[in-house]
Length: 558
Image 1 (tube, rainbow, N blue to C red):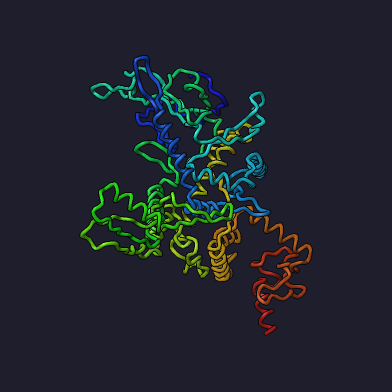
Image 2: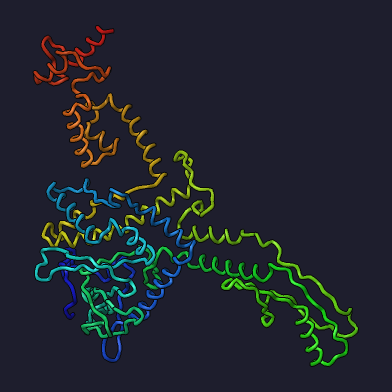
């Protein structure tokens, strides 16, 4: 394969030649293996798929121009990413990572550097919205080819309409993939090798044509880019029949089109049926057709008085030469009829009903996963207990959580490249650490705050119940981890804050306070015991334990 633009990182997961697998590896990127054959050998024909993705992305972007769709998308984006004045929308969580503190600090520093290169704190809303609408996100990792150990120097956004991920089978003899008739020659059933790269087309409306598998560039004006040079994040939705990546807006295409048609038809109906119009039956007697028409026009011009207000000049002028569809009807009537007659055509009835519009609006919100209660001018959000929260809000919170996990692959991809290029970790180390790296998103959800408050109250109640058994059946670390749900980083920070506040005198020293009464201990009790270095459960002088001494002291006070 010719040299690609960009750089590549050795894959630690590459299987040795002895591993035989006739079934290809399942990929969750919505890309199939493009391979075809012709008179001149093998070629890749991606024009159909390219055009399909191009049209889909164009349709998704046109959908958000509709007010209802844009409002629903904004609800999702505002719920997923919260922009705060002081806090970053996303932070990295390394409490579950089994690594040294220096390595964790290096990972946090590189993660902060990646966010600064992307200007994520300022552009978080825009980046997430582009990913949610388009269904995919492309970023180019710019490095110094002479000094790759300096890591990523710049991260550039690429329009998804100009990029395509290609997975191409290498050219081999077809007989190598055919099994023998008796089925014993399994070595010939090995799945062919795959070349993976990206195809960049500067002109999106000029799709890539089919090109030879050995060509250096994929068609006219196209550039082949190495896989590791591009950060590619998908929505996680795929059309398995066509092998195309979809956006979360795809389910709402039909609902939005129906809403548009219903709204347009309603406007046309109201404009055409709103006013009351008159029907003039003019008696023309036995006049010939030509003279009858002439007579009818004379009567119309005589009685028509069309005055129009010109908003530009502020004048009232006569526009008799124009005839609109909302004006009166003039019909001739022959001799023998009822003569000249004027009747009134009533306007449309029930013009104020919007039940069909409201139905399709709710259907649009349901298709986008947004609760119906969030439609404007509706009931609003319930701020009661979590047991009173609508089920749709709970489903929506879980949906947003899945979106966050999927979107976090953007930082995982960039962080992997940065750490490996700077020789902080190896590709093998990343495979072990990546599963334990989590990303903490900033919350601004009233339901989430209410839920956290109730959970904290329940945890404190459980702590009060289990406190007599701490030190006997449960350790303090287990209680803080399992009951209070504190991470290792939180415990370390809290311990430092407590020590600082004790030293400053903000809070009393727990060792100098009676845990039962909450009053300061008398001299010669716990301090003396601790000074002697004797454990609490060991006998003191005379065979009396500290617990027994404390109990006797309490009984004496009573």
